[in-house]
Length: 257
Length: 228
Length: 152
Image (cartoon, rainbow over all chains, first blue to last red):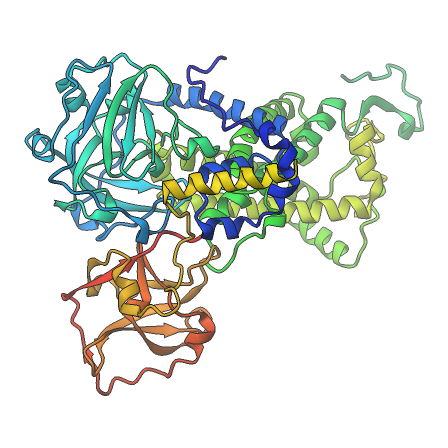
């Protein structure tokens, strides 16, 4: 079964064949502390002898197959369980691909949401533009791929409503996000249109705090945590597979719950 | 398939055999496929576990993990699951349809279980007739089959907690389903330790799972080969 | 020819510096020379209700998430500093003793807390907590506590 999503492979590890001994000798922890980008790390992990490229390719092929299976299992009418507001964890749990000291707060006054791709209206949105749209609140369980979970409450504009406002082609395959922290992400259109998928502006009734994505983050109840980018700066509707930060490092793309 | 000789000697019933071996080829194939796949699931599962440990203070060192970090443990796990389920389903269908489960795993009498445990503790594990499972064997095989099924069920719940939210509620919630998934793994690993140890202690059982083992005597006949 | 690998890696590091996002593990201790208050301030302290902290498990910022103890209560010490009193050590609740840890040495981690500024060995040297000179902080008080990402 050919998967409709064909992701770009990580950089071709064959490029590094000549340099494997040197690269393998570099201590990974040293690199992490020295701030080497995860792109470089991807190249390093691609060189691991415990994971020859043929095995890796097979695993990734099955992962793409699983994306197709997950798309079939996704019921657009199935709502995630909701909870009373009293159960909202305050503050929520922080996570990113870096620790909290490196969060770079966004200035809400100068922030703009760029819109591009298969949409009719490509004007940028200000925060007050978004705040003027109808808002919905959901209290749902955030589930991280790592295994932990917590109950959180978000308020924001249903993504479906936003996409309709900008005249998006709702038959397109992907909705892609860019963020202020270099964390590209994308979801399938079916999940984007789900009623519990929001462009979230508030947590627990209060404006999103800086570490949690101010001024706007994606919050969808039907995806694992890493599919919910924070500090969103741009939305694109497209039929070209956009991938994502963790997907480039081998994580599954569909990641639906 | 059973080939029963139409002529039976008047006196010596023990020389009447079926052509059927203890472990027919389908069983042997499925057994070894399952062995490899279960090891993949367990060790990749340990890698996933380490990403957010369930027992605080306890994690698996990298030696035991399949997948050098979380993304690859997940990929191994989500690949292996297909082989586990398909092989497992075929095995269950075969086991029921061929009558093998009924024949080899039932009945289990509590008194037999107690006696077998006592014998084992006294190292009476000679196992003359390996074609008949003793009571502890039957119990353990049933337990591990149920544990395998449980792993698939709890695995589905934690894989798709929104799509299968009803199942998650039945299991007591997402975190409880995680714990149950881990507990099922512990049961299977416990079984593996005993199973592999005993197979090595009685090597003809191991060989039987490779070559098929002795031919079975007709049902209801053999009284010799009392299994300890 | 041998310079090539070195050049390549240098190139990658330069590319990385341009990105300027460090991929540090979670819960790193304060850099040497930095005060607890300064390091806590760098962790985007968030308001939390004191009552919601009571009973929380306190973890080591490591992959195995070792449990150091449980939050028993929150107090002001005689200098007005906020201290978290933890039932520290022991096994499954037996043999623990209360110690007072500055809140700036700790972070919130979801439904738990972590101590990032002191190792378990250092914590073992802390004196057993004595309430004299301290003021109890009531459950309804909101205090600010820094954050950390999970440790791996």
